[in-house]
Length: 289
Image (cartoon, rainbow, N blue to C red; front, side, top):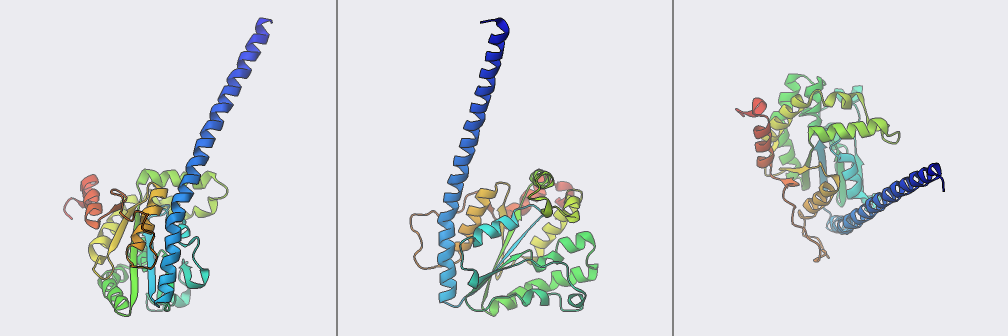
């Protein structure tokens, strides 16, 4: 065999070895994805039991999903509701207020979607737009913002007294992770619709959002509707832990005793720990808070 033929053969072997390694990597990734889906399904089955409990006992449940853009709110809502009966839950994601809504009581457009007995309502962003997004982008006046911050806990106490169970989730994501997810949206034609002008400004306005987040936690956490912080840099873990947190609010029938419902440290964190982390990492923003 001539030298050039040997070189061609060696190159072919190198290509085959590379392809084999790529196949091994893809296989490992596929196995990981299947394992994650199976892990989610155990808790999604519990969500079905919870929905049946809500319906059977005529309870009314609202779950608020808040967080920065690309924190994983939409995918978490999809995971939570994946197998639930669509007759007894609704996802509410409101757009820009209409001209008529701008003349109404601020909470009116949200209250219109509140649950009847036996229903679960999942808010993909909520009235807390006025605590973060609206003041940062100038979509409300300072007076409107201050009125909201003064009144929201009273509003939520009233909702709670009317028999509505209100669970407030905040998905906390790192700036670097948000940037990576924005880039994924930019280059993926199946996700490009998720990337808006507001998203494109989110990185530049990171500090402004951080300040409003901190004030929101300070002013709007209360016993009738406390904030639950979920660190969502790892989406899979955030989804598992969020379902555990929701399920742990209820003593529902036929709970799977073989499952762990203990929260994983570092994913579900106390409000105090989240705010301390913010002070520690950015003393220039929160040092005197």
